[in-house]
Image (cartoon, rainbow, N blue to C red; front, side, top):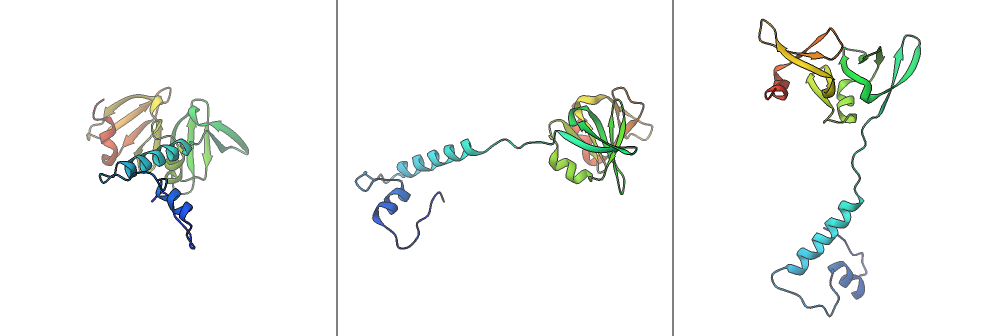
Length: 159
């Protein structure tokens, strides 16, 4: 549906909603209807904006609140109450759960590798396997190796 008409309907409004001038010829193959739908979809697409992703995070570092640019975050690891925000320079805490972060962050930049872990794809140094066969992600400049759960192992199949 592209438009609607309220009662009492007027002839001009019906013609406008129908997309055709009252004297316009109608084609049996629906060409005019397809063209109207196409035009309406193009107008609608022009009004849609790309989703905006989270660009800054307010996080606690000790007794201070700092604003951290999202592109500087290497990874997020969540426990029951807090989510750890790790950058190259510092570790901070936020109360935002991973589920909310997933919805707010750019999925091309941040990948979920475990139910409690998101990583910045640009910060991946490499992937290895431990003695039990689990995949572990190494992060540039960090000693930790973050475990990839089986449900997210497909992200690294081609690597």
